[in-house]
Structure formats: C-alpha cells, structure tokens
Length: 169
Image 1 (tube, rainbow, N blue to C red):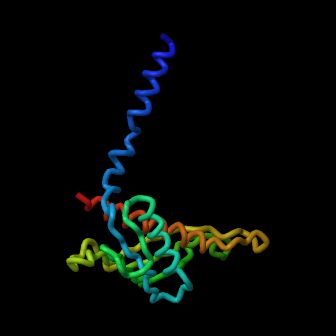
Image 2: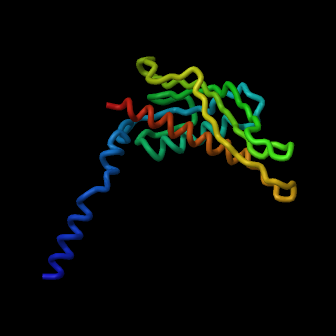
Image 3: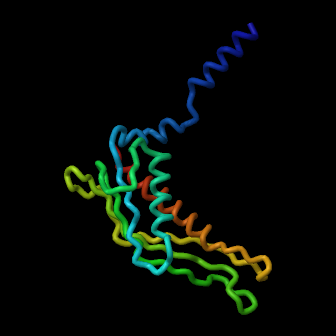
C-alpha cells in the first residue's frame, strides 16, 4: 500500500508542471528557422562593447528560442543594431571622489523577416542603464565597468527576446 502511494505521488509530481511549460510556450517559435545576429555597429568610442552586446543577444536567443542562431547576416530573421551612445557618469560622490557610476547604453534595433522584408520589431533609441561602484581605495581597485557592461548587455538581450516572444502567436 505504501509503495502504491509513493508511486501515485511520483506520477503526480512528474506529470504536473511548475508553470514553466506554459510560460515558455512561445519559445517554440522559430523551430527549424535561422535567426541572424551579426555583430552590431558601434558608433561610440568604447572598445568592443558592440561585441559584448551582440554575443549576449545570441546567447539569450539560444537559451529561450528554437531558432538556429548565427553570427552572419543570412537567416530567416535578421536582427541588426547600432550602438548609438555609451556614457558613464558619476552618481554618488563621496569625499570629493566619485564612488559609484551609471553607464547608459543607447541602441537602435531592427528585426526583419528576410523573406518578406517586413519589420517585425524596431526601436530607434532603446536605452539601458546599469550602476556600479568603485572601491574606496586604490589598493582595492577592481575594474567594475566591464562587469556592468556585461550586465547591461544581458538586460538588453533579455528585454529584446521577451519583446519578440510576446509578439509570437
């Protein structure tokens, strides 16, 4: 009798979902299709930020969709982007020195169906911000800006993929 109860409980637990199946249903969009994410154009003066943003978007697409993601320009869907502006400005000043900064990244994004030419999504100036703090002394200094760029890139990628999936029937 006890084994039967354990078996029934195991069946119930394995057959019931935790909600992820319904929430992730749009991720079936793109099955058997290719989405092209070439490295974005960088018109800022910040070195290699476009590569980090483009790579974050590719990773997010691989994780959340069934598209085959390529870094070239040939695909069923093309995501192109331009990094228009990158700024870092102090947000907290302690004892006459900046102790925390905010970076701001503005991106122009266009998502097109390459077969029809239809624009599926676009935003001419999408801005994302991320904060980071500096070490109080130079002996403890660790460059935090690259990590902040990675975080803002992930936030952008997650936001774009969420916007695209919400548009999927």
